[in-house]
Image (tube, rainbow, N blue to C red; front, side):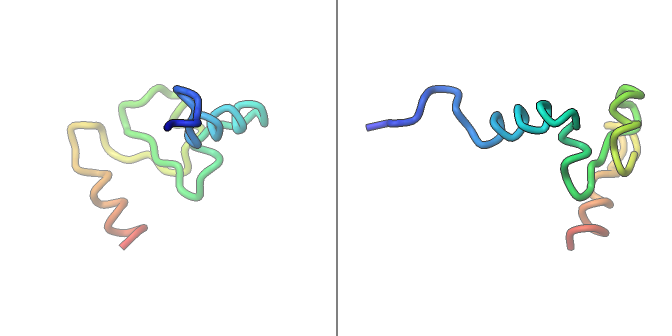
Length: 67
């Protein structure tokens, strides 16, 4: 038996909470990373901007920051 409502998730509630606080998910995390070809408003809120989606930049961030 499923007791949770359809569409109810931690991610959705977290997104609603940070929005209610006037911040973005990129600002709420330790290291918000935006792709180089992202919208300027997104890049302005990120802590780090990497290469475009055609470049392997995220792999380098993971290797340097997480491993």
